[in-house]
Image 1 (cartoon, rainbow, N blue to C red):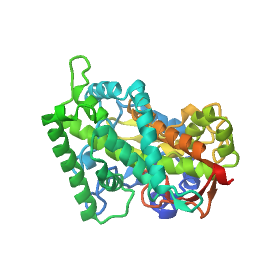
Image 2: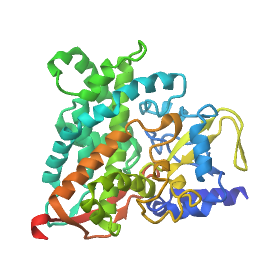
Image 3: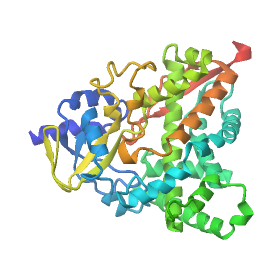
Image 4: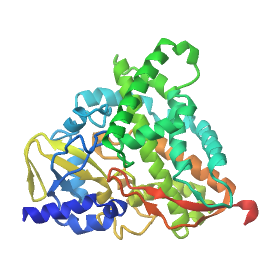
Length: 412
């Protein structure tokens, strides 16, 4: 029996399963939880680090139970802590430290601050679109626009020189395991990422008066105080690392996924053109149907029953948010893209409970300004090659190649 289960779970790591995991989730969901899955957390180095076998939870109710119960399921990641990678802020912290950090970060990421960045984000998106989206010609949007816009947004928010945009992209793809690299190259990029922000933040602090109008997010991390508590310089450095790898990589895939929705889902582009206010529902259904985040790990702090399984203290649990988003018990006919679902906000692509992503409004802003520009400039978006979904890592679901043609309004 154990060999059969291990064989069932090994299919999750196959490139074709990573590219389209949902049929596999459907096959395994009724057996959830299942034990024996091995895979890597963000920042670790396959070939050097050795992951522990983990339980797999795939049903919506099981995923929500584990993700919400932060007392019984810890977010601390011993494998990442022991690796060459920097620890992710909030993502890998438990209470009470998480409470202190989140109070400060929540003030940094308050909606009014993100809204105030709208025009600057749209200018950056327009410049990036001018550079990479040639009207009327086939363009792989994953190659440049979807790769570069999130990196440039993060550079602007943190005050990083814009010419480091491709470095940000390289660091993020290595950390989030989205690129097939040698262990030495991945480790080298992880080290370079931390060394860059360590030097950059300390230099910014020493010379901050010379940069009075730039780096709004970095300045907020440095200046925000809640109940007399501020972040240390070391914590600010790690927050910069965290928002860089998450903001650059996951949003890149999310951008590519909404391009695919506009190109491939019947009537959705026309609906948005006719009614721009429909974007919020399209955005949420894209997160449910094609949400980039697929799974994260937790560690049981005590013996806990989940479904028919007794998960013992110290055992790892792989929480599959992507599988929960496709659970037909919660989202009927999950393969259908339906922005009129009554329960769109129940998707789990931004997490659940105390670890729900604080950067969600920023991700929505980047997709929103992209959609606004597409609507202003183009009449149609046409697919010219089949969509090619990445098959490297189950951390994110997104496209490796997404070749489209953009027909300007004056040529339709």
